[in-house]
Amino acid sequence: MAKRERVMRMSVEQPLWRALTGYRVLTVLYAIGLFATAYDKFARPWVAVAFFAFLLVWTLATLPRVSGAANCTRRFLAADLTVALAGIMLTRVADSASRIDSGGPTLPSIWTAGAVLAFAIKGGWRWAAFASTLVAAANIIERGAPTRDTVHNVILVWVASIAIGYVVEVARASERTLARALEIEATTRERERLARDIHDGVLQVLAMVQRRGSALGGEAAELGRMAGEQEAALRTLVSGGLVPVSRVSEDAALGAVVRAVDEPDDEDPAGPVDLRALLAPYTTARVTLSEPGAPVPLGPPAAREVAAAVGAALDNVRKHVGADARAWILVEDEPDAVIVTVRDDGPGIPEGRLAQAEGEGRLGVALSIRGRLRELGGTAELISVPGQGTEVELKVPKDARGKAKTR
Image (tube, rainbow, N blue to C red; front, top):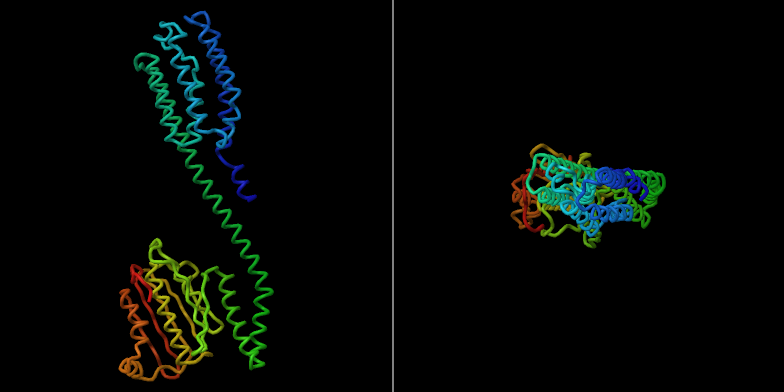
C-alpha cells in the first residue's frame, strides 16, 4: 500500500491539476484587467461587469474542484464549460460591434482554455476534443464568420488540449505499469524472504525426518516417505511458485500417491498455459523435475494431454518397477516443439514385452501415452535397455491444439 501511495504522489496528473488551478486564477484576473482597460469602449459595460463578478466568484469557489481528479466530476465539468460558452456568447451583448468585427477578445478571453484543459486532464484526448469543438463553434458564432484570427485561436486550443489529453492517458498507463511492477517486486522479495526462512527451518526438518525414518524402518519409514514428498512439493513451491491447487488421493491397491490437478474447464480462455505448472505436482521425493527457467507455453488442451501422458508414464514406473523406484522428468523447450522425457532407474522392459502386452489387451502405453501424443500431432518414443531403465520421450509441436477434453 505504501508503494502504491508513493506512485500516486509521483503521478503526472497532480502537477497538471495544480497548474490548472493557478491558470484559472491568473486568467480570470487577466480577463478582468483586459476589460478594465477597454471599459469605455463597451456598448453595455454593465453586462460585462455582472459576468466578471460571477466569473471571479465561480473561479475562486471552484478551486477545490480542480485540485484533483476525484473532485472534478462530470457535472462540474459541464457547468464550467457552460460558464465559458455563456461568456463567449455574451460578448455580442456587452461589446460593441466594431470591436467584435475588428477581432476584439471575448469576455472570458483565455480563461476558456482552462475549462477545456480540465476536460483533457480528467478524461483524456476524446473529452478534450469534445469540449474544444463546442468552444470553437461558440467562437465562430460570436464572430459571425470564421475569420483568420478566430480559426487560428480555435485550432491552437483544439490541438493543445488534445495533446495534453493524450499525454495524460499515456501517463496513466505508465503509472499502472509502474504500480504493477512495484507489486511484483514486493511479492518477489516477500517470497524470497519466506523461501529463506522455510529453507533454514521447515525443509531441513523434513529432510531429517526422511533420513531418520528410512533408517529406523517400519512405521517410521512410512512417515519418512511422507516427509520426503512434502519436502519435494514445498521446495518446488518456494523455488518457483508453480504448484497449482491439487488433490492428493491414495491408491490402496498400488500404495502410490496419485495427484490430479484441478484443471480449468474447456470454456476458459484458450490462452497458452505454462506446462511446468502442470508437471510440478508430479514431483515427489523419488520424482525429480528438471525444467527451463522460463515458462514453457502450450495450448491448454495440449498441455493437459502431455501432463496426462507423463502421469501415465509415472504410473507405469510405480506399477512395474516398484514404489521405491526413482524417476526423472526433463522438459526441453525447442523453437518448434516441446520435448518431455521421463526416465526411471528400473530393470528395463524385456524385448517383445510391449507387443505381448498389447496382444493381451493391456494398452496403457499404446493408448495413454502414444495415443495422446498422436492426437496432438506429436510422437512418443520408448527406449528401454535391459538393466538400464526405461526412457519415454514425448514430443509435441507448439501449435498443437489437443482434444477438447482431457481423458
